[in-house]
Length: 417
Ligand SMILES: Cc1ncc(COP(=O)(O)O)c(C=O)c1O
Image (cartoon, rainbow, N blue to C red; front, side, top):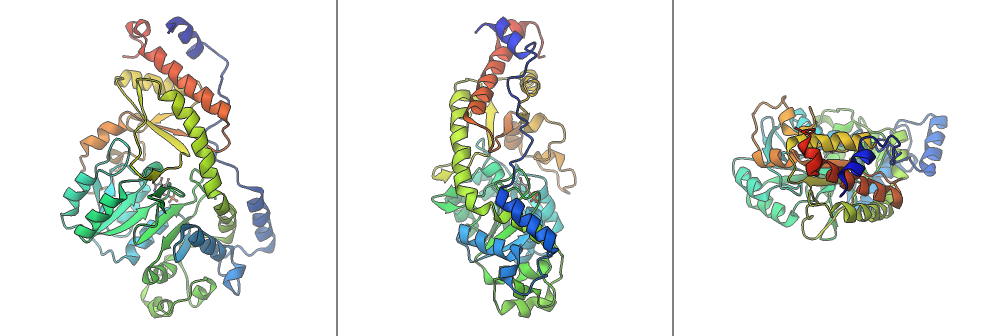
């Protein structure tokens, strides 16, 4: 490789070859805009302002989402974090109960556990970003009652092993499927393995409604309690499609935390439910083009997904190998100069997905394996509007930048120390 030419392209090139802003989320479909406008004009933004469930976009979203997942019930709320909080309460978490959670997840997850009164117990991750089941088993035996399994960035763990451990130690599994809508393990959708599954409609997830979330379950008691915790008061629960005698039974016993979704957000989310699978296919087609290019570099490792997993690549994670810290920082800097925002979780100051930045946790946690992985793990958004050419351009620039920073001639200048 001609390092000087490369230097010209990367550092002094001036004209950017990649012009899309990866931080911009996917636009919402026209159908969602029309429905949202209709709701705004009617003034009926409140989910319980109607007479029956078929008049509430929130209830219709719950029905459609449960149909997609194949679960009996779903409850739409104002965020995935609320779904996590509520599902832990519904599953019987008591103050001080320990909740196992992967050490690689978003800060909102341990925060929601604390919000519910639990104590997060962090578990190591593997280099494919899934839970380390050896560490899980070790920690599961220590008086823990719950596992909040984040399928971080849509990476699905070995669910057979996870379920076996949960069964062995009588641990209640709840899935944080915020970022794994549409992903499958042995053909079964993520978020349908545990007592409850929690999903997010935050803008950079499979469904973009700005904010919002949903709790899915097959358990009648969980759904009844969840509806009440989330803010059904008096007989508002009659405006859900869910009809259970448990609702009036629990009514006066459950506090009302008002974490409802509005009809407006629900309408935006609902229009995207029928698109989940086709969007997933487009994401994966794009990712294949990109990964075929970058995997040619000896400095990139795209970890194997677990066996029997169908993943959706709405973002890419890959590990940098045989680069020192100076080179990793230079890689990130040059990629940013090229308008391709890649972050390396573990070297970015204050990254909210790094457990050592969760200083609000009472316990000190040491997860050396996870820390090492995150120090070289890259994160890149791959929104749906990217085209085949964009994937090729991004992949080729990554290869060029890696060649540049690993070129002996450039190394000798001491640029990256
Ligand atoms: C893995 C994971 N879990 C939970 C959340 C929280 O979702 P929400 O913003 O809907 O509360 C996020 C959000 O980014 C996430 O990435």
